[in-house]
Image (cartoon, rainbow, N blue to C red; front, side, top):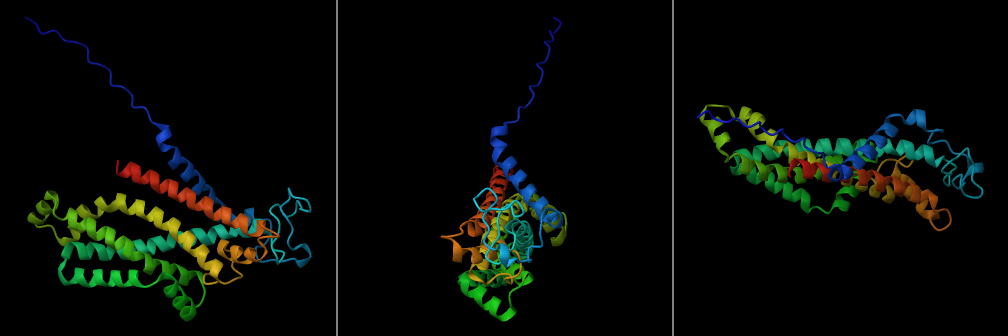
Length: 288
């Protein structure tokens, strides 16, 4: 008998569950807006962020009684335009977060690869050094660095890069210990591949997902840390328009002129929320 052929069913189109991606979309959109504001700061800010006018000091936002359309978000105690300082402060926060994470991730990833793959004394020494850095109280480390090296954006980035590297080191070391026992790594070693090739081609690509997710959360944390240091007077110099410095100046007038501290606080919260939403979405997508 001839075999009867039945028509094959058409493959169903996969529907994208946009509700599952809503947080990531919102986070990515907000982060893109902050990046755009930081890049275009000279064209967006209506005034130089360091120009003060004591005759127009402590003006409320334009929608409050006594506000001025010339200063939409008001002015601070020195007569500096708050909108301009918020715009330029975006640059400081994003610069600290981005380059701090790149430095911490680079140091932690390199040392974690070496310690996890080779083990032995190298692993013991690097792990001990990592634990030593983590054991130092963070505020004491900041005070020492700010006192010895001075207050500058570069010093803040270096501080975050060194103090944040043990987090990446621990993650990478643990993952390398697991990955190097996988059959494909053993096969590559049996075929005569060099250690550098195995680490570059077979180990490092499998770390991309965890590292990217950790980097987003650490970037958010570093933005909070920089703002906190600025609030304590241990971050960038006072004349630099950073959100932490704005908080430090505005706290003196919080009960009378709350917008001086509330507005930079809202900016910090929004930027951290955007990065955290994006990081959570990456965590779900890369490790379903």
